[in-house]
Length: 151
Image 1: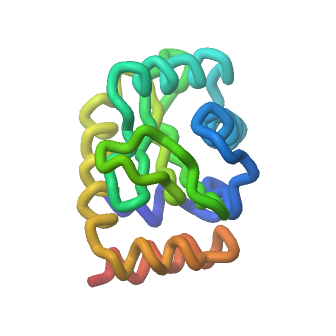
Image 2: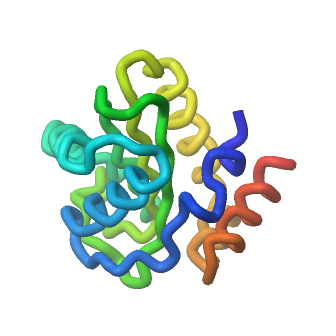
């Protein structure tokens, strides 16, 4: 499964307008629901509930908010880049600019884990993170993913 196939330009928000954690999650939830369906309130609550358990800010200026919602028929994945760093209670204490959100029903739990793992593996590479942060358009964001996945 290629991340670049899931994160087509319509699934990427560049730049994010929000400047705080709830705002970023709300903005990404809106894009996810617009593209993948589901109930906005249920998806938002699911992701925020997960954030209350433990922040999904994984370090390196990256967060992977995620959750489960029975209102989605399949896994939905979106991404966004914030212009300014967003306080996100990340594990390394650093603010976040690069966001990937994944939400789906319980039935796709295996696929959900694969996507989270794929994201975590790819963003370990500083060169990719920098290219994604420099992306001025959703097309540039997807192109950076394509190049990274071809390696």
